[in-house]
Image (cartoon, rainbow, N blue to C red):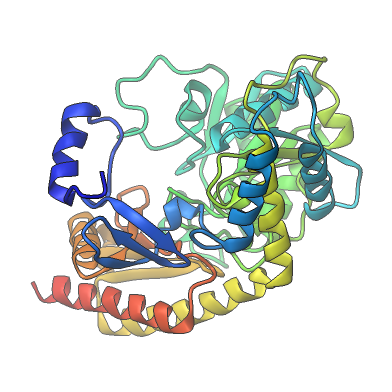
Length: 436
């Protein structure tokens, strides 16, 4: 296989794999390390995508690889529901201690972020006896029937895949650059959060609402970070009504924003928190951690899965958490974010194409517009910038409601030199597209 070219492999991909699984670059990886990827033809790329936020500790992190090899030599699978194993318990214990909140917690482990969201919903419904789930515009929660329903964007995620799951209700998010209410922060007094009171009157009753599920920073929705007081208002409203507050930290967690969990920036402790992606350094794993009294509600056998909490993935996750602590990866993410924000603001002065610079820590983005006054989305320009970057050795992704947002998801082990190199390529791409 390694003797084949990118072109040959792409032809094979078209003949053997349906079109549904999208691809961003037409290249095939041969090896990766840290923040670098080499394709099968030997070309090097800087990675600002991180496997869509999976590689915070870097490609082939040595501690993670060592833990995987050690576990693989012992046993690969028994199913935790049949013959239990210690790595599952150790990881659950670590997450119970590390997640926000000075209260007793319990954790279940599953295979993916979408599974994590599904199980959080099951737990919340089991605890409250209520059916309804509140989610947000521009949210992305997964591709299963339930999480696809919870996801906001129709194309490509939901188009022609209905009918959808019932009892899902959607509120506007605190997307200040494109405020759903036409207001301007801070003069708006965070109206979008206080709007929750009206929402419960006009869309779904609190007495029928099991949970509010929210991303502390929108991922696929455009790296939108709400004002600092936003979540405390929503959290208190949920608390007084017995609505479970669920933080989806699948993309924003494991130090991406400069804290282990993005919700820590907002000073609240969610009832349930979902982690995945970078949790296991590239291995499939997700966790649902929550208040013990809530997590205990589902009956014996009500939660689980054949591969859930695979021992190899658990060992990888434990190595990730060790590395995060030893290297103070949160501080590194904060420093990376400072460098990116500084460069992005300078780029904004140079290129009118940039309408907004936003984010938390290393979870930072540029929203591109054709006109800063009208804020008309520059979707085609974003596509060209991504393409230019790929052609010049930088893997980067677009996202957002209009696919006009350029986001940064580089591994947090990236060196300063690599970071500047990648930002230089991005700036060259902006210049090329702006002058075209």
